Amino acid sequence: MKILLYGINYSPELTGIGKYSGEMARWLAEKGHDVRMVTAPPYYPDWKIRQGYSSWRFSKRQEEGVTVIRCPLYVPSKPTALKRLLHLASFSLSSSWAVLAQLRWKPDLLVLVVPTLFCAPQALLLAKLTGAKSVLHIQDYEVDALFGLGIAQSNSLKRFAFAIERTVLRAFDRVSTISSGMLRRAEEKGIAEARLRFFPNWSETSRFQNVPRSDALLARLGVDPSKRILLYSGNIGEKQGLEGVMEAAERLSTRTDLVFLIVGEGAGKARLLNLAQQKGLNNVVFAPLQPYEDLPVLLASADCHLVIQKRGAADAVLPSKLTNILAVGGNAVITADPETSLGLLCAEFPGIAVRVEPESVDALVEGIEASLSVPGKNSVASGYADEYLEKDKILARFLAEI
Image 1 (tube, rainbow, N blue to C red):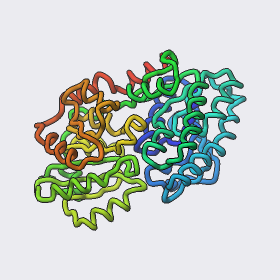
Image 2 (tube, rainbow, N blue to C red):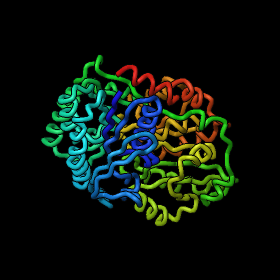
Image 3 (spheres, rainbow, N blue to C red):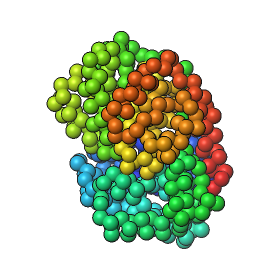
Image 4 (cartoon, helix red, strand yellow):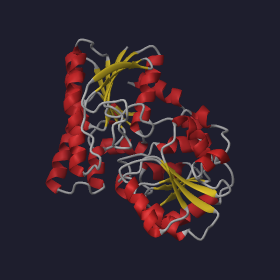
């Protein structure tokens, strides 16, 4: 089958959507499908084009069995609401030529990964002209996040944006997303249940099983291996609200047995570094994003994982890092309201993680203490990953269902 994947994020990005799009494309190619990917040069989470790639030239090359077409885009060094919109629009404009150039190739299946909805018109046009089945796969509800996080606040703009979103969602043959809460949100937006598909992010569970703690890795990252590690690993941006972690670190500064390890990059990292310096936090260590091959041992070396989001991001964004935390049997503190996807997960599988109220430092500190009281690996978390997050099972089911 000829399969065209279309999305702004792709390998070699190691975090978030790019990681999953890359793994999906390679898996499909390994199964014998002819796979093409229209994407951008890697820039996330640093918001900087990676060395060896261009932000203003088209490129086409084979990458691990996948034909990857990279399109120019504008990448702001300091993203604001307006600059983010320009960033997304620039990719939509440049990539439309690459997408419509696939008319002669005639894909059988087209999968648009959201964000960004800006790319929907050309995706739908190609599907109509070629007869391809169209699938919209929602990793983030970007319109919900835009208004939920307060990035945009105009009521008239809000009504217009949600109306456009509903129209776009209804135009695709299938709509898939990564959690039960996000599926429910799609129904609220007017998508019939029969057209919805559950397509969760996955974990290469075998890579994360029975992985020991590594004192050598912790020492290399500047952490005393004898201490108990409170780990946040991933993107450092607006959605997370990691300022609360800095306040929690300040409150727990008398606990000399604890250290907060913040691993990752993102638009908010400089602000977080300044905040830690202003507060004189000696119990916080920052480290750069680690290679994927080191991720299992990094996660296995933490005593408590911090899965932090602002309240407005709940059910608009599901943190992709959680899948591997569960696979490694990590003890996690999750900030989520009870009715969100993460809240429902914690209720359905008691013991899988400690759920606390978002944007509450008191709740976060209590959650950390509760998580640290759990001895050893979390068997509920690892058991859930084995049953529901195994990569081959998820991708095979998704392909069969669409």
